[in-house]
Length: 414
Image (cartoon, rainbow, N blue to C red; front, side, top):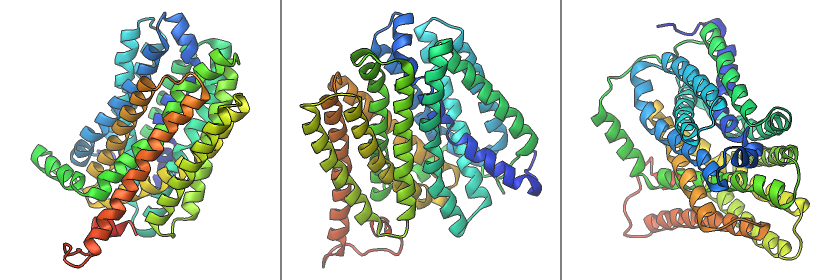
């Protein structure tokens, strides 16, 4: 087993941060190509959008399964295998006209991405602790926001000049470059492994899932990230088919979406010392009010500028909520190592996939008013979960309520 050298710790950290956004890269780079893929492959928009949901579902399930494996067999070798598998799947997609093959390879990409991301998040828990670990975990969603900023912009350019397949050639080459960099500069970081026992893993997952604030946090993460996903699934058709703009405009608008999420994440990081529940509740209320105002506006005016008003305001507030809740969930059960990281990532991604796909299936988002309605459904879900958590806390503090332990999950949120 190749352990990471002390002299490579810094560059290993940089590589880890570079690979954490690989999921967003694989999701967002071909967003401007969705209409072209629909036309070239003779498929409906819903059939092409399904490739996004398949990737998300495989990514989510993969994270649930891989955490225990990484705790038992290490981080380095699974990560190397996953980078190779991710690249291979990308090249296969670029060289097929079969929608079924694309679905299959998107599932492979999703699972390999799960291995990469969980192993790289575990990298930080292996090597850092205390305030430094808290600082790094609060940067995760900030770094993750880089992909929605850069990927659609690059994807719009690639689509315009080289066609939809070029996006997947790019992903394949990206995976290969980092495969070689990892082989040269990275290495194993886990101090000791634990035997792979399904019973132990199941018990750990049961303990985490049965803790209300953690499970509620996963659902809030899924709903908040779902705001971005329903935009990604709907905007190419709104911008290119309804408004008749080229794919590069879709990419530029998606870049603005990413910048908005990043801005929200940075504000959240600046408010890291503020009471957790109060800032989450305030952000959700502001988001709901903004959504209502924008729906009223777009009843009368619908153009690219009003669409960007949705994106800038609602995606920034979603980024604020997502950043705070992700850092909270990742550190809630840090003693479980890769399993906690896997359950956090897998749990919220599965819920994101389910929530976003249900919204676009139930609500036909063919204009900005219905896009706002989709946003509102997700935001109401966030508010309901926050209020439910607050109610449980209030009940426990009443006379006759159950005794609160030192590590009470609800009070940790304060």
